[in-house]
Image 1: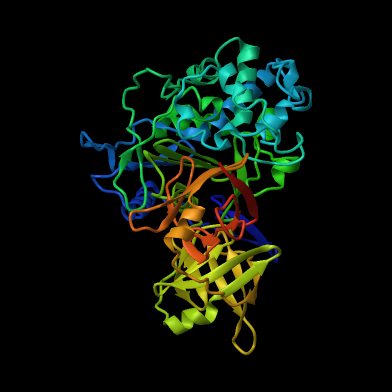
Image 2: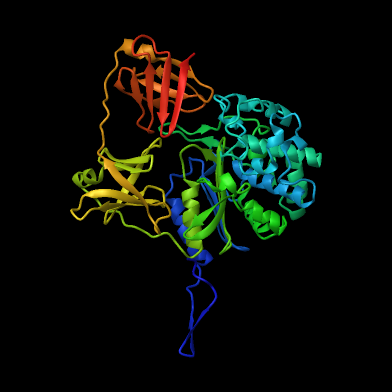
Length: 555
């Protein structure tokens, strides 16, 4: 729990004892801690970087930047540079609609048909469904191949809605939760219908300019924004490249705003300080309900609600071509952490870093563990399959190191901490092996927030080693081709070393191994591809990744 600043009075035998809590870390301590974390990241004067801001209430504790704002020109990144904030934009769009509701111009229960009468099934979709991702509308960014080239086109709001409005829905409105960019495009369209202005102009006029937040802007297509950092892409084993192009008309109210770290701090102070919305609207914004409360996101309106070291946490992240963002707020100690990257792809994990810094600034840091060295025999002893319900994870040795792979996910390296405890690299999560009285592993406890109450996974079996065979040229040719379904498009092709690769549209190519002539699998993620028929040219493949199963046909 947070160590309180006030003095607790304990009455005992008619006498009073005052117990003073330890003071919270000051700016100097927070700066040392945050700088040490960031110095450990793979950032130098030849790479894109990260800008960080930490504050407690109206007190600035730390503000610094690392890496380059523009690699080509050798311009160092500063905390004043501006970044695309991606889906953190949703928080602004949600607040804008709630502002209109506070003014009596709309209601959460209003059907979408009131504002977009021609939209399919609009009478059954409410504004609430759009705000908390329970509308069931198909997310346009998930359309196979869409994010590859179509995202470059400049579209009006109506033209963007045309891209997804006639697609089959994922579920009936209100029946489930699925994070959805299309819903926030529709929300932006509702703002435009009510206000008579573009969605971003209304946000500017109603929320930003009255509060002097001039460093949060919509970039448009040709607007020059002073201090804008360049965006880059990071890919394993490849040189840094410029981020793929996109028209900023397409992220729309789901992700098109640009901001600097200081402006996002001020936004947090205004929003969570009761300066923008009525108390009732703000409470609705941060309170997940119904299907939106029954998922890992625990989603309100543009805000995910969770806990950090036992404290309430309100946060949202964003990812867009060339940029990643994270905005965290801890209401109890009034901690704000802003983290902004000018690169996409693998790189500094802003969620991990942000949580570590926020916990330290609140006076409740994550425990520190010292790594220990285990023999391969000791690692082999805890290797195996562990299950919780229908979910499973595998602890497996690769190149002398222990990795944890959750079904359908990628392997994460584990670091031994002693006493059967293992930490996940660049994560606060750790697991502790549970043994029976004979000393044999019978399960493990997962501690997603470092400590507290663990989640038990039962050991259910040993690792089954997959075959790794070489396919003949004829066997490879029978599998090579383009495959597609309504949800997915991919191609199988040869690399220069005559091995097979798989590439989902718009994503990097990944190496495949063969368990048999018709069964391939990936090693960077837990996924398998089964081809049919058993002989001759393959006409269909089934991709299985965790609980997901996709049947694709040859094109």
